[in-house]
Length: 263
Image (cartoon, rainbow, N blue to C red; front, side):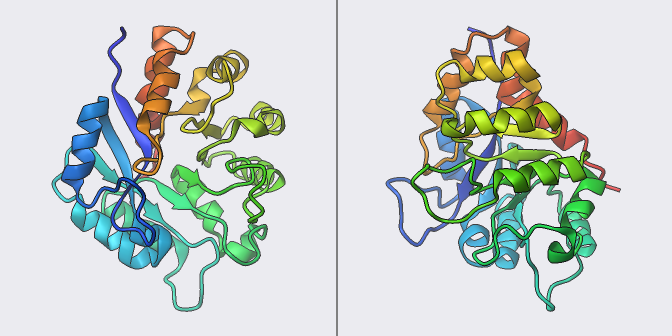
């Protein structure tokens, strides 16, 4: 079988309010699981940043991963900030100075569909200027159809990708039930990518590869809540070429990180 250097764009470190069956309390816990599954590298979000306070959690992930050669921090930013926050450009400069080159954004609990420039203090434009990959979570395209919570809509995603063509957008936990609505967006927006941890459409990897190229697919697991085995199997057993398989496993995400404009 082809040797693959998997790079997980979507995993978490730290405590949670409602512990799942498994959690990573330390980098060693995460690395032990990565070794078990054969995953070389990972971009890691701290659960405190995701669930409680981005400022605290972002600091904690930088401190926790100091000196790590296989783990890279992913910061959480607020889509709607407040008067007490530093300007977006200042936040990004601090993030890049800390060696972090990817952000995770979730829809705000209030007014989740308000993502225009005026509402986000220039967030998207600043990210696009630096070509910083965005892990777009909890979108309407990445949840169960019966989930009634509001998230980034298909219209939001299309408008965002069209307005900021230099912004790499990665749909996290893309749900196969949204395949028909995402295909027109992928066709018109070369900067849109799909994270495959929940993309269980039969021959879905092959479909996206055939229509748009393997470079649109990003490996992620959602660990520790999700079992990494699903995403691994999707890559290993997809009916694609070895070069395409290597790109999906890690090459595509590494390329996006290398394209970040750090200065």
